Structure formats: structure tokens, C-alpha cells
Length: 142
Image (cartoon, rainbow, N blue to C red; front, top):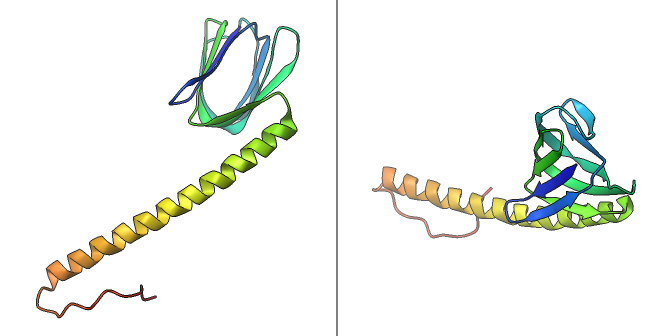
């Protein structure tokens, strides 16, 4: 079989000679071998496992995605983010680093969005109550 994994920015894997793929969706884990029926499934955040022609297992941590099997010979996966490895321990370390980095970026984005919301509410309040004296900006009151 052929296994193709893509992200929004790259073709992360394009591999011929795959003998088995194990994926996971909301109903649980399932396996795909050559000749599998056509399939379309939404993948959970999980670890994808595949075996090459020599029987060696390889791993990809997926941040969800969509899996499609075509003609029993092509497995295509589209995901937002992934990490590849031949060693589960190393894969875990890579995923933990990515999660830590993403958590910091997400927190900064949330704080930025809250600041924009607060500024918009202040502008709306000034528009609805134009006669009231304006307070000077200072620290956020809680």
C-alpha cells in the first residue's frame, strides 16, 4: 500500500510498500491492510502506527485529522499537526515539547484576545454614554 500524510504546509510522508496501518477514530482503533474497502474517517488525537515492507513499525502522533482509503491500495491522512518517529519514547518527548511550546503561544493569544475585547467594550461604553467623564486608563480592575 501507499501511505501519504499531509499537513496544511507539507507532504510529511509519501511512502510505498506499507503492509499495515493502525489508526484511531471516535469508535476506537482499527487496522488497514492491502485490499481494505474504501473508507473515510475522522481521526482522533492519537498515535498512528504503520509497518513497512520489512515489518518494522513506525509512528506518527496526530493532532486529529481525516483518513481516506482508496482502492484498497492508498491510505491518505490529512492532519493539522504531526510528529514522526521510529521510537515511541522519542515520539513522546517530541510531543511533550510541542505541547509545551503550543501552550505558551495559545496563552499569549488568549491574553491578546482578552485585551482586544476589553478595549472594544470600553469603546462601546464610551459611545453609549458620551456625557460621562472619561476615566484615565490604569491597571485593570478586578
